[in-house]
Image 1 (cartoon, protein in one colour):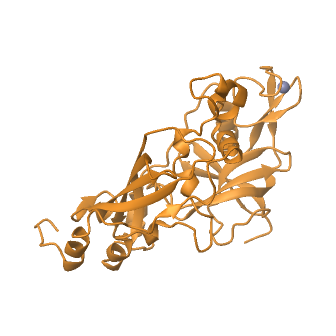
Image 2 (tube, protein in one colour; image 1 turned 135 degrees about the horizontal axis):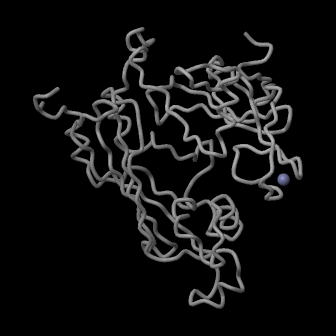
Image 3 (cartoon, helix red, strand yellow; image 1 turned 30 degrees about the vertical axis):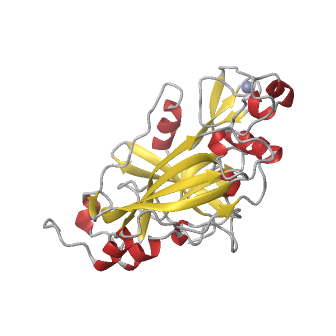
Length: 320
Ligand code: ZN
């Protein structure tokens, strides 16, 4: 690995295609439009009236609503699934790098450049080009190749309105093996929370195997995570109320990346809704990722992950 090897044939072939189209051109399924702008701003918490308020926007030098520049790639995105769903796997270079054994992927860089504001009615077309496939590099994730793609976005007149550079690392995944006892012993310590004056009672409660949630004594609102005042009435008077510990999985994700060495992956992370109505983020260390489902009844458990450091987690209620 330390001596430079001549580039393998597949890599030389791929590098000969630098600058080639990496996928067919894609024209946006819908022209730039107000409903998508509104929903995007809502999701992003964007409140700039230039994107949302026609009267305001008309009073500016722009003369009307424009789309947020960061929506550049949104217009040409396909459906979530189905034949026109865009996938990184369909880009030129991915299959060749996969076939050489670099099957894992992580996105490393994304830069966008905006040349003009898009307005309702503009129709965007995207073209993507393979800019560069790197030599084999050693990275913290393993040996791999960086692939650089350049996206060009043009309007209905063929004028370039924006560009995007997207860089991914395709790497050889580490073999999946049960950690040996010695490796487990060498696992880095579990990351610690930042405990503040407002949150100390929660962590102290865990040491006594009690799940404590802050209840406002003025309006009785339960709130978590704890803050300096009640989010409902701003009162700073509160008591810690012990929860039953029973609830359901309200929602969840299965985390694959990024990986922290202290955890096992794939890692189910749930948003648990307690009987008392409060929701909290939780690990499900004894629930297999395939088994997690929305609505699954769960119950709290406590684990001392380091001396004097107790964490809560949930397991399936009525399950094994
Ligand atoms: Zn309150």
